[in-house]
Length: 282
Image 1: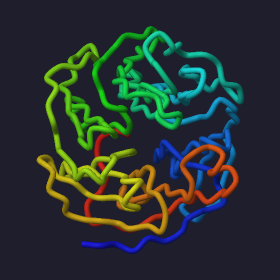
Image 2: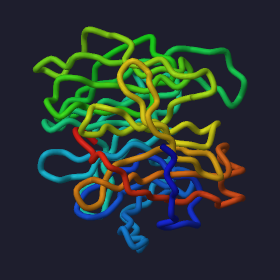
Image 3: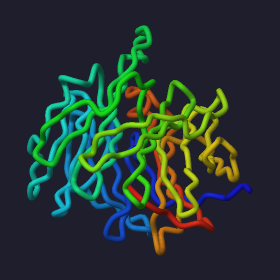
Image 4: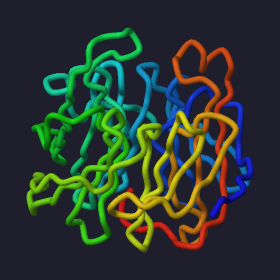
């Protein structure tokens, strides 16, 4: 099935990390250097500025916001109107940090690029970091091909991560202490699909943002694609939110490299109604 998208808000530089919370879609304008919250009607509320490129978003159990700071490889925590250090990821991240999912206990799983692919560096696998609520950091998994968007199933027992440069979704079993085991391929994707942001629905299917094919695809475990949502530009990330979590929000952009994204300011938030509501985290 193919679905038509409507524009919710536009004029952004490059959007990442969509999260539905308190009746609004929270997003990072990565190349605009700020986190904003957007109502379903398109009203934009600035939350906090971050010149070191915000990406993944999540919340501690007490409601404090966590923000991935990409270029200095840190996880920051919003205290009032000020961001303060929560964890230093530079000991594990070999290049910019990116997406994140935070579980119900406040443990954060944070990915990183692994290497500077835009500069033409040779491929280097990346480590997925596990940040405990006290800010201590350890490796959750290694040898990942650009770990990107992540979801956690409603029972808290499985984490699925998009490995962008491996064209696949990879699953892990989550232990009681947050550590990961039982690595397995959840779905292998078409070679044209470089999975970016992802979100989970109540039937256990995953919506996958596919930047180079300009669409979001709904994938079942094993790799069967059931639905497609097409855009007129790169689709970077997606989230299920709105009333009953039955709205698919899609973040799209005309430019991906920082200079191009800032010059074009062609990023926007799109939305479409879907039949199966969101589930799990984020």
